[in-house]
Image (cartoon, rainbow, N blue to C red):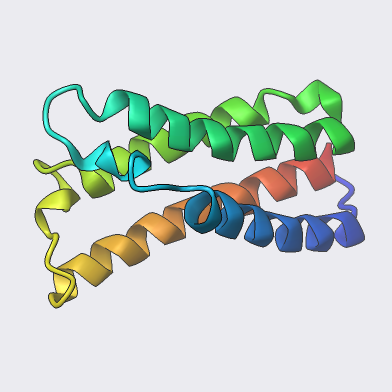
Amino acid sequence: MTVNVELFLALLIIYQVKHFAADFLFQNVWMLQKSRAGWEFVLPLSTHCAIHSAFTLAIVLYVNPSLWWLAVVDLVTHFIMDRIKAGPRYMGRFSDMRSQAFWICFGFDQMVHHLTHIWICWYLATH
């Protein structure tokens, strides 16, 4: 397996910027309804995850269009992780920002997103 190290490192930086933009600049109060009970969370969370996926799709289409499906991987993993983090029956029950449990859940969520991005960058740099 050949690794394009320069591409891998560039993608890691690009994905940090992508994550910041999609999670903090482009996420709005309506999208934060992903913590709602029942099925009311689906549209806000899907919209938030679609923004992440759109950024990934743009990056992938530039680097290697045949790997377009990596945008779907980003969409699905982001959707599942954010629902687990925000869902009131899951990690979302730890909503007190003054508690250690809240920050552990927040950190775990961010770690999963970053590990997903690292894997996508690795895949793009080796295929």
